[in-house]
Length: 146
Image (cartoon, rainbow, N blue to C red; front, side, top):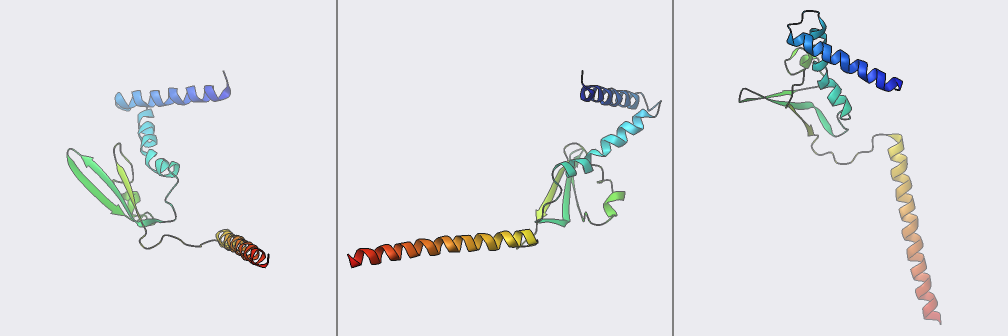
């Protein structure tokens, strides 16, 4: 048995203990910790998904939640602190997070490495086209002189 397996078994035991304590009414206080850990899965899920990309609109993030047949849609700005005190801070099962794309932005040069790669690629392609055209012209001229 490796150390990783031992750690996984200990984590599973702790989760089971917290879940059982929660079911029994939080007698030992482990249930509250279990619930807090479960609630933190929302921010963890967003982090595991790779955060919001460069073209995601951070001011128009929507969470769609259905409770008892009623659909509730909350739009918020993830850059503000307002969401922390909201009921939508904790992601629940079957919640849908929708991140709208920024309109009108499909390509942008926003770093030095991107600028260098765009310039280098353009120069390389230009050199390729120039060399190809030069060879074609030379071969046409050589065939005409013969």
